[in-house]
Length: 205
Ligand code: PRP
Image (cartoon, rainbow, N blue to C red; front, side, top):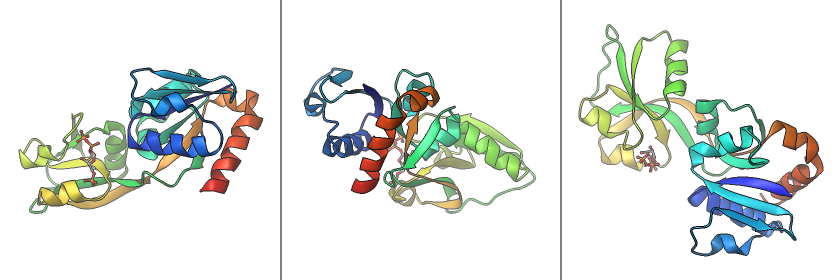
């Protein structure tokens, strides 16, 4: 049995569609249900649907053998897991952005609003810039608009949110896409099954 942690939402739906094509199906998953665990004994697979930022926690602690998570989350949480495969979808960038009319005053510490405090700290430490982190959980773009922060560190996918709020990207810190990750001991014990699944994914992508 392979236990898979999938992120709720569009990314999880795409990954399930992929695994379904490979024969790891669980028809209950596509029904409108509040169930949290979906098992197909015959196919030897079990899925859990969790918040995208929680996938790596389940996999790191062995509650799931494998999972799919954005590289942005991996960079933020640095989980102790194997990052096995870049699925190539869910592409976005972790970037510094602000209002188009913002001018940096390098004499002052920079106020950075973000859902990614670790990524932001690491990036600004690498360029020796003093910052103050303002941790938010959503609608990050509002922060510079209301002068809560000077800049944001956030993911940019299409760029539509920034554009519609007269904002732009100043620096791209890292590129992100969906990654297949595995628990380290599961990878040893279920190597054949996991590698078989990866070869299937590779062939399909
Ligand atoms: C994310 C991110 C940006 C937006 C970027 O927010 O925080 O706000 O998507 O996408 P775009 O470049 O295609 O416009 P999300 O939709 O996850 O919601 P949130 O604001 O609640 O974090």
